[in-house]
Length: 82
Image (cartoon, rainbow, N blue to C red; front, side):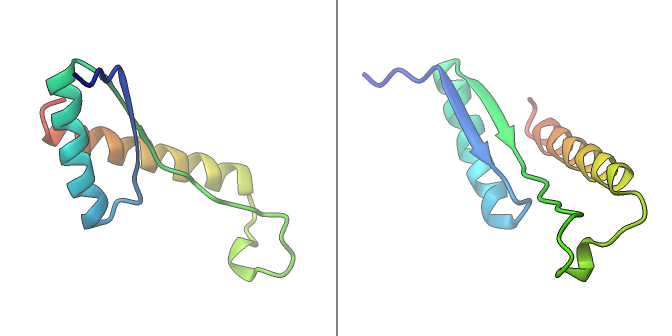
């Protein structure tokens, strides 16, 4: 029998990744596994060729983006009873 101890799920907060999260939660519950949900905040304020990356306070923006991602992941897991 398959023994799963840990699952890692990357999410981009799309509907497809929400469905994948449903499956990951199910598998984690069935196997008593730890579920780690990951979202990447890609931000490069030093890229002079990308105007969307030019901001006044890049550290503050990164902090706000990371907090928003953590909150969104927490909400997604809470909706699924985890």
